[in-house]
Image (cartoon, rainbow, N blue to C red):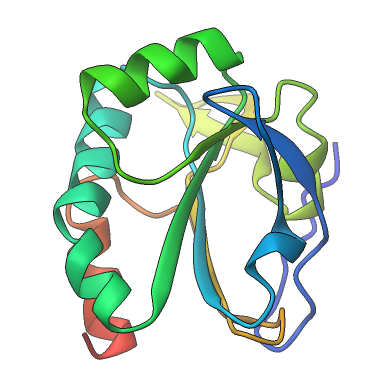
Length: 156
């Protein structure tokens, strides 16, 4: 699996995925806007729920600073729809069951759990500017406190 990490200043990889409602969402849909794309391992797990709710609770301040938020996971649409609804999220969740987009962003690769190496989703976040360039690539972020740390780095 490709685990090459993206760096600040590189063009964000183009993608088209289906959201929780089965509608196509492309990165190009956000052209001319700033967007925060975050990858999370699994909907309805404690850490991913905390992270999604943190983004949701901070959505107004992120929007006020000109940012849109998009979450991406390997979960099927049906699971994302349930998670989106249960948590009353106000931003789209995209399904990447093939892991193609995860790999383009370097968000899938080797992880360690209790000293054992395995392949999995690397919790990561990318801030993309209005020209489609990555301004802040963050890998192996923690679910708890992540959005507060992100807001601090963005000066929000």
